[in-house]
Length: 521
Image 1 (cartoon, rainbow, N blue to C red):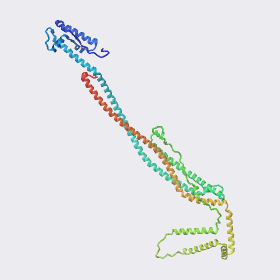
Image 2 (image 1 turned 90 degrees about the vertical axis):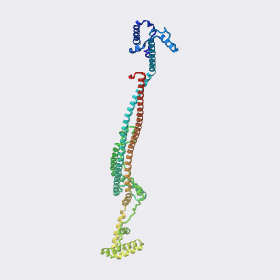
Image 3 (image 1 turned 120 degrees about the vertical axis):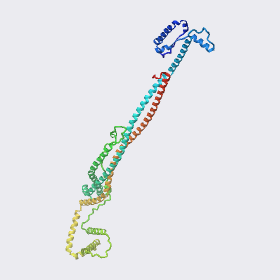
Image 4 (image 1 turned 120 degrees about the horizontal axis):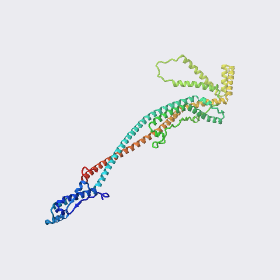
């Protein structure tokens, strides 16, 4: 029973000890022998009681005397004489001692049987709970500190990225502005040079020329295309190399400065978290497009390739009147009205002499022109007037020379001459039209450069914005993690304190009711 279940509470009662009342000489020896044998039985054979407590489990009583005494005591009658033998009082006391010891042992055993194991289990549970909660508190505190460090590091990195991006944006915008201004000046200068050498480009157009209107229309249709192609090619050779090199330098600078703000995983595209589909690789060589549209610019050009005698009366009058009229008109617009002086000014002698001569020449030429432009009668009158004035021989010689000049010019007015006149007129007309679009073309080119650089900058800034967004998301996640860790640590701390309090209460209960105060579970 002690091996399989638990240690039993065994008491040994030596009954009918009243029979030994008549043997007082040997009673103590017999009692000693029985005590030794009973102790040996309890300690050595049954092994249920320690040797120090074994004697307290052996009693020498008389159940009959205790029964008689208690029956009469309960009835209130005195015990009859002869019912109790000598020494009955010690035997009654021994029986009462047995009852008290038995009651105490049984009560203690019942308490231990009912509560000791549960108390021990509860004590172990509270210890384990205390250890677990303490480990959770330490782990939560450690993780919280690490999360705090990561949070501060990422927050510092986010602030640095925002500040650097602001400074970088300002610097890059200044560089883009300077670059566009430089490109605008470069293109304007190059286009102006091309306009100056427009006659060379027109001369390079070697399509056969013919004054027939159908062929001339085809000629006029292909010549602007030739000019636009040549000017665009020359502008490309003069400007695009410079622009491409400058843009590559700026884009490389943008790329290097922005890559310092983005994790390496993002620029390599190896991390799915940072991969955004935006590459930091160069966008490729940039080529400006020069939209001259010479065909529409020169669509209103009207050539004049009819034969014009350079020494004809009308041509001479146009030259003379044009230069005189132009000078007179210029002089008239250049003079600034002044307030009249009280002292009249006297004109110089040279001015007085020149004015009658100019007026006479103008009058004569005007008269000749009016007569020449009249009928045959006017022409004959003019010839008669000149014959009387300078002589017929001079008139014949001058007329012969004049006629020869006319014949020479008329014979030399070939298709080549017409082509030269056409190209000269076209150069003058195209030059005037192209000068009107110099500013527009240069501004268009600078706008292309600005768009390309701004697009590159925006594309790379978008990558930085994604990095900032990822950092902000990580900061929010860390903040939530820190909050959860703080909540877990606080709850674990409360549970640890509760476990410690329960453990203390169980120790008090065990010490008070189950074992001695100095006993430990």
